[in-house]
Length: 186
Image (cartoon, rainbow, N blue to C red):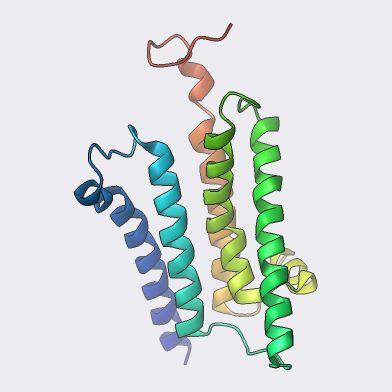
């Protein structure tokens, strides 16, 4: 049983990685002049939508979490609305954190918010798909030694690596301010 879960998790992670790579390649066939660096806003939108859709589909197909005890339509709608609110709150929270770490507050609001949406897609959306809007489950999974299955362990690793990767990716940016491709600060 554990080997089957590892294979399912491995396939899910490979599909997520492939979707990120494909979002950098496939839009060039449909959009004139598309490049990841040249049209980064388009890429952020395409990547967020593709990865988010894939995460929701994988959650529905693989069913890594246990089904809820109550399965009435009202309960499902309530859970879905709570998940949407939590996702939006995480986007706002990541946006605020990114601004506090030095992103421009007014000049690049769109870029900063789309980056916050992408970061929320890689972190919060996966947690919402597997754990739902249950705050106690989130605290249990992200506390020390709180993961009880391989899927929850994967959540810990993916969330931590996404946040650290975003920080390490932005860390060297101030070191290149003397380069001609950096905007001038007045």
